[in-house]
Amino acid sequence: MMRMLSVWGEIWPMAVAGALSPTITVIVLAILMQPDKPRTRAMAFLLGAVLSMLFWALLVSSAVWGLVTATERDIERYGRGIDLVVGVLLFAFGFWRLVRSPDPRTKSKPYLANLSDGPLRYQVAFGAIMQGRNVTSVLLFCAAQQHIDIAPLAMWQALTLTAVTIAIMVSSIWLPMLLPIRATDTLHSRLNPAKEWLSDHAKLIEVGAAFVGSAYLLYRAIA
Image (tube, rainbow, N blue to C red; front, side, top):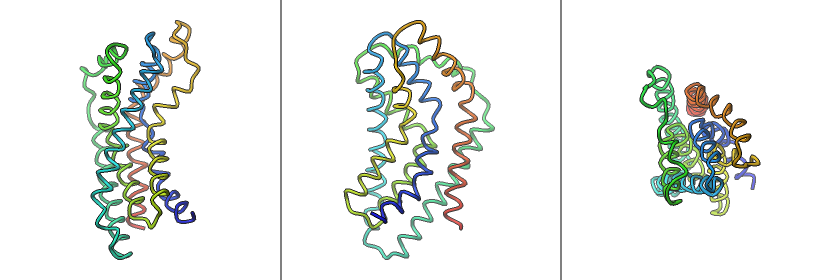
């Protein structure tokens, strides 16, 4: 149990930083403001996001499977190397996101207009795509997952840490779902300011999360 808590102490900052996803939160709020089964469609979107994270977990775990028999020094060196690479990638992404000029074609976010239509599998697929294209979350999750995989943990402990990490990473989806949603004009007017604020500050939040995650990983790799 102490080893499990020790690994958790290493990865929880990555999970928290990866949970900052204003674009996804705006999408969830838009889904919850629809009149047709808003919670069910939001749950389908959440399912897609979780499936996307499970895909990355399996991919990372299979990539490091051969290292579980390596020496402790090799495992530690591998972990520090991953932290360094992911930290550099996060910094590069944050810098690119900071200097990139906004595309006026994406200002209206036309994909938000059709979230109340079609079968639920569309929301599942959309959730998987949106979570999978969230560069900051994916990079931080991959770094956290490799720490879980190379740690000397029991299977149930590793699975528990992976599940908790995923739950935190997708909290940008399930936290808005905790609101007492009703499909009324009053609720729409109350949620709109939050949705607009997140849309206006999405770039700042994403850049901040990328830089914070990068600083943490680079410190772990170099210190």
